[in-house]
Amino acid sequence: MSEMVAGMVGPEPCTERAEGDVFDDLALVVARQKSDAARRLALIVQACDEHDVVEDDLRDDDAAPDAALGWEGAERWVRVGADGTPWVAEFLTVELAGLLGCTVLGARARIAEALNLRHRHPRLWEAVQAVRVEAWQAQQVVTECLRAGLGAQECLQVDDWLVDGIDLLGWPRARRLLKGLIVRVDPVLAAERVAARRQQRGVWVSTIEEGQVSVEGRLDAVDGLALEAQVSRIATLLAGEARAAGENPEPLQHRRARALAMLAVPHLAAAYLEDHGQPTSALEEVLAPVPRIDPDKLLPQVKLHLHLHADDVSRADADGVVPAGSGVVRIERHGPVDIDSLHHVLRGSVVKVQPLIDLNAPPVTDAYEVPTRLREHVIARNPYDLMPWSATESRRCDLDHTVAFDHRDRVGRHQTRADNLGPLARTAHRAKTHAGHRWEQLRPGVFWFTSEAGFQYLVTPQGTTPMGRDPGAARSAPPELAQAAGERRRPVTPMREGPARPQPGWNDPPPF
Image 1 (cartoon, helix red, strand yellow):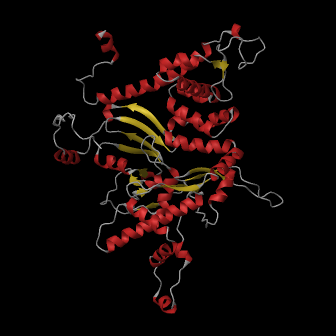
Image 2 (cartoon, rainbow, N blue to C red):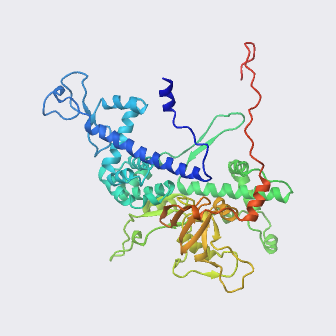
């Protein structure tokens, strides 16, 4: 018995290994997990195909699969998946519950996930079985389509659009793409979901708990964005007041809470914003004998970046009538909406159309700082961080010089140019500067990333392709940085157990 138990707990950890082997071992474990998850789904589907109902128990040969049976309580055919999936034997859930370590209802859900994936998303199913897409990501696609109320035919269309290239994206980016495709495949259904969501608006304030209340709400998009902008604006002003008084500002979330509370008293909030608006000229102060409130100073500024394809823009017909749009608009940081819903989001707003960015004419400069026009060019070219599978939008990233900027170099070299810039989130930027991680720009917007351990990836605007490991490409931090880091680090010592916790006695008070 002890031998059997010892064999079940897995192999002993390897204690003697060459430096860096841990990464190869980890990559192997990850690959096995992906393969095992795909095989698990395939076996569940195979069990559905092979497990039969005893046909003699059916009432008659013409009975429908879900018809009453001849023997009361006998097994029957049931549909556990969505439309487009086959019927399965009812008692298969009992068999699989034990094997999967879950309840019968849990086994029914696992069967439904597998059948929905194979029959409603066949190309995605093939990608999972080829271990190009992870099983959990494919199951998320199935769930999103079910929540949106898509039928089998719409799922097949989404499947056809999505599967090519999904393995190049991290899941957050793939999910954003999926949401846009769900809107595109059935705009009428998307509009119905928007209308249903609008009926769920409300604000809820909890009871007092330890002197505080929680506030939760659902607003129209335009109202929510305006509230967010106003709260952020007041929180920034409060920080400025504290610094002007020589004090340290409160934490950001504390200031945001104060800002929301201030908005609960409209006349005080209006006066505060008026006082902290754009300063007036001395002449205006003399000519204004009584205080007045300028509404323009009270309005919050909400900046949205919208992206839509030219084919989705409605144009007037021969009679001058502009038909309703049926395309999808992507709002940075928020996601996709259909064009009809965009009119509701932007109601009452001033829309500014930015000049078209021509990626074939990148601006250049000799300065280290990146001018706005060049920054927008790089953001349009590479909309996401250059870390493999990153979903951080480049507008929130640093723009890094791929080849480090040489401040001693002569003017005219144009070191700050599009083909020497790329968006890096702050952690990745620090890893490039202070460790052995590095990016090479093969051509504008296409990067070759090599990690400190030698793993290599091709990173493009379309996604990430792992290129394996080249131990010869591994590189440590620059010597001077490595020495400085080593001096700052304390030697690793074994963990020591703390003092033993005394056992509670019978007469001890309860721990509350």
